[in-house]
Amino acid sequence: MKALVIVGHGSHLNEDSSLPVYEHAARIRERFGDEYDEVVECFWKEEPSMRHVLDTVESEDVFVVPAFISEGYFTQQVIPRELGLAGPVTNKGGKTIRYAGPLGTFEGMPDVILERVEDLLRDKEVPPGRTALVLLGHGTDLNKSSGGVIYLNAGRIRERGLYDVVAEGFLDQEPEIGEVVENVEAENVILIPVFIAEGWHTRETIPEDLGLTGEVTVKATATGEKTIYYGAPVGTHPSMAALIVARARETERETEVVRSAG
Amino acid sequence: MSEAPARPSTKQSVAAASREAFAAWIDEAPEGRVFGQVLIRRTSEGGYSLRQRDDAGAAKLVVNEEPREAREISKLTEWGEYRPLKSSPNLRRGWELHVKDARGLAVAMNYLYPAAQVHWYLYREGSLEVTSYRENAARQSGIYKRIQRLSDEGVQNAARACCEDVVCLKKALWNVDEGTPLAMDRGDGEIPCPEPCSVFVSFARRVRLFEREDRRDLDEIGLSPSEKEDLAALVEAASAGNVEYAREAEFEEPLNERRLRYRRLTLLPKLRSGRGPAGRPRD
Image (cartoon, rainbow over all chains, first blue to last red; front, side):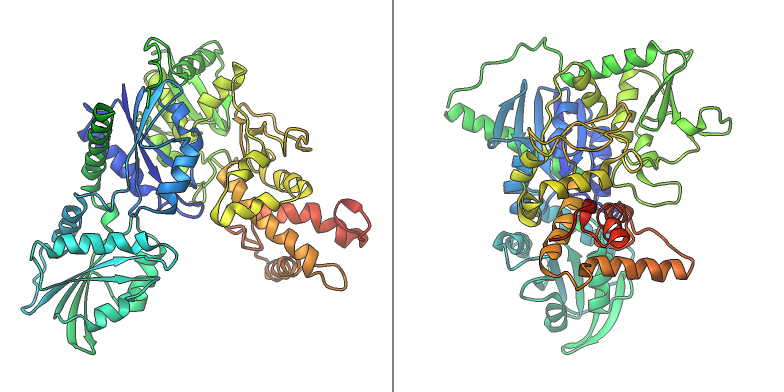
C-alpha cells in the first residue's frame, strides 16, 4: 500500500492555516485515488501531530510532502526531527518513508503561479500599458532561502518573457513590497503572494500597507497611476494538489536513482 | 549503504490492528461506548452511529454519512470558535454521523480525535511509547527551546492548568521525567496522552516567561508584571460585566482560561496568604 502524507504548519489560533492542506488532500483523494491508498494530513501546530501521524498510516510505502514554500528551518530541521526521518529515505516501523523537498522550489511552481494570475485576470479588462508581475514573499533577514525561493520563481517566469517586468518584493526583508509596487515601471501591476495559506498578512497587513481595496485597485504612485491586481495566495490554488503529487513522484524517481547508483 | 531487511508484508500495521480492535470494542457493547465526548453505537445495518454524548437521546440531529464530515464537526465549538485541541471538552452538539463500517469509523475518529484510536489500542496492548516532558523539551528548538529551562514545579502547575479533564479529556501518561511523576488528576477518559502536545508546549513556553519574571521583576508586594496585568484585565472585564475568555490557545492574553487556571495555582495562594506559590513563605 502507498500513502501520501502532507505536512502543514497549522495554527493554534485559526482554521485558515490548515485549510489548504485539507483541501489539497481531498482533491488528491478524488483525482489520484488510484495512486495512493491513503492521503493523510498532519501538522506542526495541529493534530494529528507529525510525531504521531505515521502510527495512523497503514501503508508500507509512505511519501511525505511538506506544504511549505521554502527550504529552511521547518523543512530541514523540524519536520525530519518530528517525523523521525534520517534523510530522503527512512526505513522504520515496517515502512519506507520518502521525504520530498518543499513545494516552492519545485519546477512546477511557476505554472501554478501563472494559473493564479490567469484566474485573477479572468473577466477583467487590463488597460493598455506595461504589465509587471510582482511575486510577494514573506522573507526574513534570518534565512536567505526564504527569499531565495521568490527569486528562483521570478527568474523562471522571467525567462518565459510573458511580462514587461517580473519583480520581487517582501514583507520582512529588502526590497520592501510597498517600494517595489511604488517604483515598478508599469501601468498594470499583478501582485501574487507566494504564501501557503490565507492569513493575517494576506487578508490584513498587505492590503492595508499597500492601500488595496480589493482584487483591483487604481492608485496614484510616484511613477504614475497604476492598476494593481491582487491575487489570492498561490498555496490555496487547486493546482497545488497536482503539484504535491508531482513532488511526491519526483521523490520516488530521485530515490530510485540513488538506490540503483548505490 | 545497506538496506534494512525487508519486513514480512503479512504483518498487520498498528493502524489496521487498532481499527479492528476499536470496532470490536464498540461491537461488544450493545449500549455503545463513549470515547472522548463521542457516543459510538453499532447500528442494526452493521455500521456505526456517532453523536455527541450529551445528544444520546436527542431526536433532531443533522445526519451525515460522509466520515470526513467529522473534520467539519470537530473544527469549531458550539459558539463558532476554532478548536486547536480536539480533546478539549467543547465538541459541539446537534450532529449524527452514520458510517458504514470499521474503516469509515476510523476515518471519522481520526478527525474527531486525531491519532487517539491508535494510541488507545497501543495503550491496551501495553506498547504505547510514552515521552516525558524533559525528553520532549530536549528536542525543541527555535522559540520553544526555552521550555527546557522550565522548573519541575512549573511543569507540574502547567500540567494542572492545561491538562486536567476540565480542559482536556486525554489521560496524561507522561511525567516530568522518569523519576518525577505528574502530581495531578490525570483524568478518567479513554484517550491516552503519550506526550506533551503542541498546545502544552506553547503553554509551557508562556509559563517559563512567567517564571523568569518571578525571579527578576517582583514588586514590593511580590506580584510580577504579568500577574498585575492579568488582575487588571480581570477587574476591568468583571466590572464591565463582561468576562470573556481569550481564544483557547492564546496564552499571551490575560483572560485565557488555562492562563487563569495557572494563576489560580500560583497567584491565588500569594494573594490569600501573602505567601509564595503553594503556601511556602517567600524567601
